[in-house]
Length: 110
Image 1: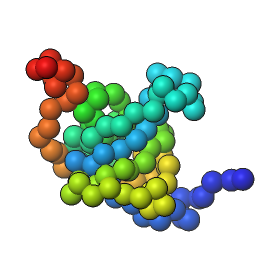
Image 2: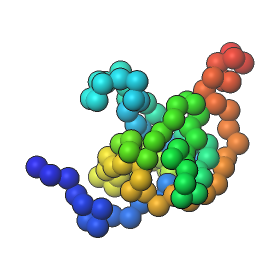
Image 3: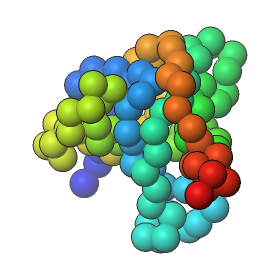
């Protein structure tokens, strides 16, 4: 079974404040320990930027990383049927920032 081509994928926009799921590159592909959830803190759509998304986990998310959206910036959950696993580069990036503590700063306060 082959995946969809870029033309066949429905258009999806990624903006700051959304909750995403992705696999950390620190683990082997498919390793359940690498599955992460994170909030997008900032999106920079500059064409020369190889790491256009800042996450509250502090991890780098390259354009070739597979991810999917779980909750939009308004806080509404997205159904699994609505969103598919896809590479970051296939999203339409909407530039912006949200003010929110990172996971490490929240741990320091605890």
